[in-house]
Length: 309
Ligand code: ADP
Ligand code: MG
Image (tube, rainbow, N blue to C red; front, side, top):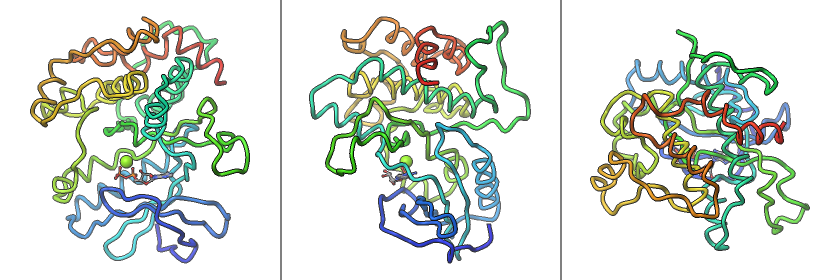
């Protein structure tokens, strides 16, 4: 990560993250459109900085069709710049809002497709490899390899699940509607939370409501891959019900509801099988919560995988 700022043409701001602004840039040598995310690290001590750099290296190795590609990083004084794949079609929270406004349910097939894409991305993170091809008979429990670069997302929510794919718009007309049935899902905004969490700035800038946070994380237990599964369950639940499973007016009431883990069934429009799979994700007992591996064995998810291949 030597300073390579001159290789990028800096374009407009497209969003504001908790640590700095997000801009569209063009990598001039490849004429590729990318996103540049700013992280101000002036307040961090050297240990925290080292951890941040180490995590950038891990993200650089995480290449998967359903994960926002991490291209490069560099820094300038007190700012770290992360260069990533540009996802041109918004995120899952925008898609959910679109259906909410239209007063329509997201078709069940699309829900399975998107869940499958998130799960294959999570599998790569949690197991360090891709899931086996469908033809393979799953005869044994696959366990994470000890010491492997196991990556936990830690902040899975609709706003961190991006949508990509040129075929999403039917024409060059910018006002034409997005055809979400062709959405290519990209998991983004990874891991860095780990080192940023410990920094003072995090405490003061993290104002998000923890709708998707698992009960064990709320109780200050360490994150595990299964914490991502809880969040995934909440995200897919929201795709169906158009609101998260746990809502409350106050933070402590929300915490109480998440710990109690009682939630309404998704609308009758959706199958029992989908409801059951969500129940196995939004399960407060970690021992009983489904793993990424177990979820991918599900028949409907296997059908969805087949149609996506
Ligand atoms: P934070 O989670 O810290 O708030 P995000 O990474 O979600 O920051 O970035 C804020 C906004 O920037 C997002 O809502 C989105 O609009 C935009 N954005 C971030 N990453 C990308 C990307 N890879 N492609 C397109 N837009 C992005
Ligand atoms: Mg985000």
